[in-house]
Length: 250
Length: 96
Image (tube, rainbow over all chains, first blue to last red; front, side, top):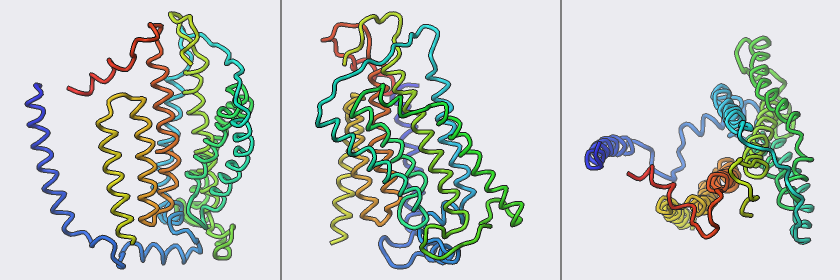
């Protein structure tokens, strides 16, 4: 197909989409008004289940089944990266060298690493109360660990990162989401039904299954992302092609 | 006041996104993408969606650019002369 034909096809398709999109947008409620038909119902449902963070209530209670569909996306990504980035036959393993780091950078990392880890745990644990949750907190936890690489070197990061344990934890957390759903099916008669005691509103144990599912997602995201980054970092730092004898362009 | 804040955030996002599309070198693009992620996080926070802003901040600003940079470094590291510019040949396939 020539570039001109491609452009013609694109323009035709874009015109159709633009027309339908504009037609649909005229039916939307105006931007920034006080009336939110879905929002009001979601807030009422969340308060009914004593979950202070409505977004978490939607994600892990009202629409928990949707999250069950989203969760394997990350798991599949990690699995795919693990498969694709494994050590090929023509690649060789090269142990990462110890590197010298500026003392200020080392201090920055040493101070920030524990603080960031605590922030990550906080965001996961308070997902049912304040903005955040399993996904956000999990990403913070995963990136926090990599401050060790910034502040020291790759060897220090590898010591902090027991990959075999993380892989198992990742799989267990991913499976536990479905298991909690099955528990709801057995105890309450519906898959992912919120069967746990709801607790007192705005305390850390409120929300029934919301904090449990939240924690499962937090563990899965944190472990999955660390594993994902580990494969990328291994490729960049510890693998050498046979045709490449000099050590990198750091 | 809030209207102006939203307008400014949207304008910044549009500007950053256009720059990201127009930047052809992957390494530079990753940096622009990181700035775009920051702008999107601000926009989401201004629009009262702190949950989404948090995810955007972590994934769009930190994780995605890091993965792109690691990939670029792995892919372009070849035993060529050091003054050889490595990123000229790899943006031809999605252009025409």
